[in-house]
Amino acid sequence: MPLTSSGTTHLSERDPKVSGAEMVAALVPPPQFDGATFETYRADEAYPSQQEAKDLLEVFSSGRGAPAARGGFFRRAKREAPMKPGVYLDGGFGVGKTHLLAAIYHAMPARRKYFGSFIEYTALVGALGYQKTVELFRGADLLCIDEFELDDPGDTMVMTRLIAELVPTGTKLAATSNTPPNALGEGRFAAQDFLREIHAMAEHFQTIRIDGTDYRQRAVDGHAVVLDDVAYESAMTDAAASALVSDDDFGAFIRHLASVHPSRYIRLIEGIGTIGLRNVVGFDDQSAALRFVAFVDRAYDAQIPIRATGTPLDSVFREDMLAGGYRKKYLRAVSRLVALTHS
Image (tube, rainbow, N blue to C red; front, side):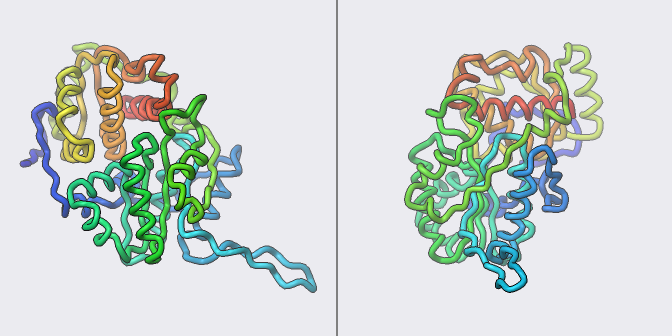
């Protein structure tokens, strides 16, 4: 798709195509985390588990075993058992799990390593076929899987099988996950659900819990910014003078998302400097809401500002949606929408 450096386009008119080779080439940390390192991860002193997680993951990335315990004068220091080939980062949204996952990717001295969201890996299986995907990753040093989807049994089984074939060949794994649809309450920690879903592979993962509050809410107070029509036109005109912007009616845009596979959402926003959404309304269909969540994740990864009119974007998910099994997904999207409308 030809890209222009400035002006206005419509996402609802884009029909991006992605080849298998392009999907493989895209398995690197998103631009937001190009410079993510353990040194740039700012552990919150109020939550010691953040520093503990950082220390453990630095060891994991180095390829060494766990740190040795300190010995006494006449005692030999006792070395802990080596770390498992997989680590699972268990924590709420906004505590820096993806930053740490990217830091692992950057720090590990590996010849072949991949970083992608769960949906990117399963889309690759769909494009190449299961066996070709196994052959592609066989011998890889590291696979980072962000937001391991626990709410699709079929895709979860595919990924579990893939992991089972790669671990014996020496591949190390690092993963984060969402909360499954039957989880109740806050759904803040999902380790038990993750380990249950990957069942036979659970023994290969060490769970590293990360407590904390959403850093986006620490940095941005209040709600998503809503513009009136005049302010919206002014903001989009200014943005279009120096970059390509998208301008879409929210309803038409949401309908278009249903015709684009989520694995192509990143290509949908390629080259876009600002996303404009007019006449935002709340969702009454959960499938449409979840597609929008997947889109927001890609927009946030690319750090593309959003300008919107109508219903505040942090209010588009109904109360019953926020109280249901996909609560964690929706709350993560709300957090990201607030940040993007302030950017």
